[in-house]
Every structure is written in structure tokens, then in C-alpha cells.
Image (cartoon, rainbow, N blue to C red; front, top):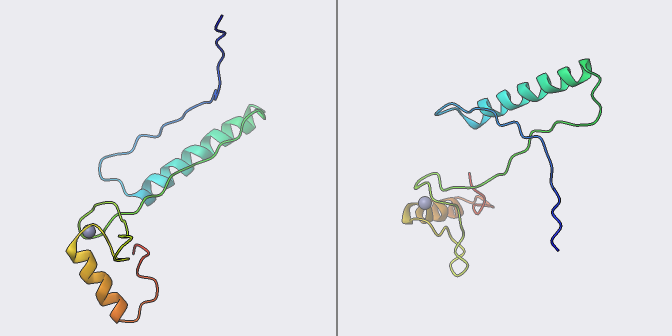
Length: 102
Ligand SMILES: [Zn+2]
């Protein structure tokens, strides 16, 4: 017979991000909420939890907005010709690591 259990039990706090809010501004809001939760936990003597602000990172082309990828064959940007042109100009200009998104 199947036995059911709960796993990955957690408390989720999802801050509201207003339209057009920058990453930095939203991170500030998240850290402020984190501090408020921690302060409340200290007041109530709650020691059974910790609070962290977590995020994932991603890279996109600053020209076309598509995900930043390097073509394995050409070793150049795979998204658009303008990115390739910029990449080549940077390489000719002596920049050492143009594969990193700027
Ligand atoms: Zn592009």
C-alpha cells in the first residue's frame, strides 16, 4: 500500500515586485523584508528558523535580449549578428574575455 508523507516543507515569503522595478531595488526590498522577519523572530525568541534571500542568475544579450550563448563552432555569440560584430570589435580592441556578458 502506498504511504504518503510530506517532504521539502518550507515557509515561502514572496515579495511583490512592481512593474519595471530594477533588480537592485527589488533586492533592497527583499533584504528589508528579511530584516523585518529576523527582527520579529528575535522579539518572539524564535530560533527554529533562519531567513535568507536567494536568487538565480541569467545572462542575456544586451542588443537583442535573447539568452546569452556562445556558439561551440565559432566560439562567438550565437544570438545575433550585432553581438558577433561587437564581440569581434572587442577582440580586435584587445579585450581579453569578451565571452563574458557585459
Ligand atoms: Zn544578441
